[in-house]
Length: 293
Ligand code: SF4
Image (cartoon, rainbow, N blue to C red; front, top):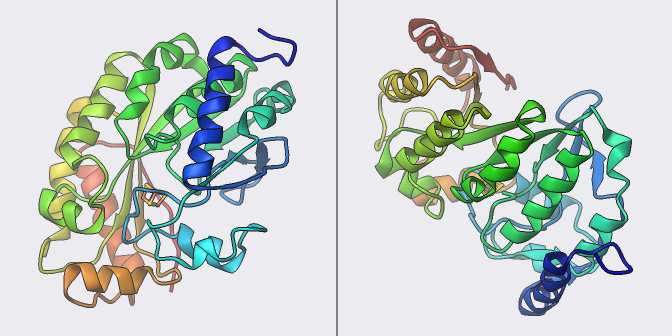
């Protein structure tokens, strides 16, 4: 540790962040790194990037950045979703100045507006995960990336306090390539769940978003059955389901990618019914995040 409380690794990351933020766009983040989350009452979130290079076509986050742009990034976030990305130039200082122990025993999501395991963020995320868990925070990591497996040593050490939710939208490799082309295939993400589970880490599958029937995956029930077969074999602790929600331009992006428009009218109810039917058939503990429209 040096006089600023940084380890050698953290100091080297500080310099690579400076290089990275010159190559992308940078902004300053105000500590603490943990902010109030809108996911649930009394919950918190760690979000430290603007944009997500995974650029999933259905993503809800673009609408948030376009509606509430961070100062200095107003021009940047006008670009299409997946084409903009910025990280705070002072991220390491923000980590050091966050009084992590203040959130001891509190549920903190990481992250709700970007994947924390983007290749550009992986080294920063490792530091954050370790600091949060060392402070006794109950950390819920959400990702579509395989890079989370690189932190398995830390996750195992603090397994009492950590849960990893892996998002999977469909079992169809074809549909996945179309709607989330930059993330690992569904089978690779199932493998991430399996490996985490094999190491005794609490895992949750986030089946999100479940799209209405379309030409690439007409039978939603069959799709969920294929996922449920694997999930019950892996022994995931819980499964969350969520239908597609229109946000900003995501329906436009999806229609372009799919080559057809899809309607979500009444879909939340229908998708929920299919979800619980499949969960019951496979003895999985399921919870549906409803949003009626
Ligand atoms: S990984 Fe998550 S945050 Fe990133 S683009 Fe996909 S849905 Fe959005």
